Structure formats: C-alpha cells, structure tokens
Length: 141
Image (cartoon, rainbow, N blue to C red):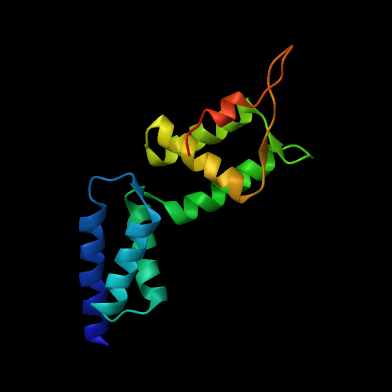
C-alpha cells in the first residue's frame, strides 16, 4: 500500500512538471500522461485520471477532453431548431473556447468548426440582400 501511495505521488509530481506554465492540455498530451501513469507507475486508469484532473483543476488548466464536452453542449444550445449556428453565436463559442484555452483566434475557430461538423451543425447564412455562408467557409480546417 505504501508503494502504491509513493507511485501515485511520483506520478503527481510528473504531472505537475508537465502542466507547468500551461493553460491548456491537448488530448494527445493528456493521453500520453495517462499512459505513463499506467505503464511506468503501475496506476489504474481511474487513479491516473484522478491525479491528472486534480492537478489540472488546482492550476486552472483546461483539459481538451473536458473542454470539448462543454463546448459541444454550448454549440447545441446556441443552434436553432434546424441545427444551424449563426455567425454571432459561432463567435461566442470561439470566445468561450479561447477564454478557457488561451489558444490563438484562428486555432479556436478551426476547433469549434470541427466540433460543429462532428455534431452535424450547419452555419446559418448571413447578409441582408445576398445571404451566404462565406464566413464559415473562410475558416480553414
């Protein structure tokens, strides 16, 4: 039992080191840390996940997996009955994503666009005379 606690503490120190100076942890980095906890430190997935989430919460670091879930819910909420998201609502979702992650505007737009595509949400046309979705197509995925 004492070695289990020691291993958990050593893994917690590794996680703290990896999270140092970050505001956001991408899914692949999160996965690598969890794999490290499983293979090198002999922790269960539940234990490794608990240590990672605890450290991230302590340092106010957003995890992409958890942020993706809340961002998807926000997009679903902002969409209309026909599963369309207006340009203003898209900007709100991007602002939410950027506030949590600190990534540049272009990256946040690409990630939110990818989430919209995963959720089968479409952009709502904008314009007074000629309505188009050009604003959405201009975002390079």
